[in-house]
Length: 152
Image (tube, rainbow, N blue to C red):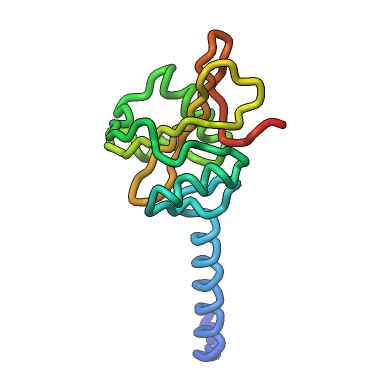
C-alpha cells in the first residue's frame, strides 16, 4: 500500500480561490447582461434623454414624439420578428429576451434625413428606462427601415 501526504498552505489556497473568483466575476460582468449600442449609455428617463439619444447618432428630431404607445414584443418568433431583430442585433440590441413583454414605443419625426421627400420617423423601444431597440423609417415609396447610424 502506498500512502502520500502533502502539506497544504491554507493562505495560498485562499489567495488562489479569491483570484479565481475575481476572474470569474470579471468575465461574467464583461459578457453578461444586455449589449449596448454604439451610443454607449442607453439610459433614458425623460423626453430630453430620448431626443439626446437620437442626437448622439446625428438625428435632429421634433422634440415632442408624434406617437407614444405601449407595444407587445411578439412572444413567438416569425420571419418578420427575426428580420427586425437582425436589424436590432446589428446595432447591439436584441429583442429576444423581451419576447412576450410590453414595452414603450416613442416615435419622433426626423428633421434632417438626407434627401427626404416624405416624412421620416425614428422609433425608440424602451423598457425600464433603457433603449432596447428601434429604427429609422423612411416612409416614401422606396424608403427603407434602417438602424440608428446616420449615413452621410
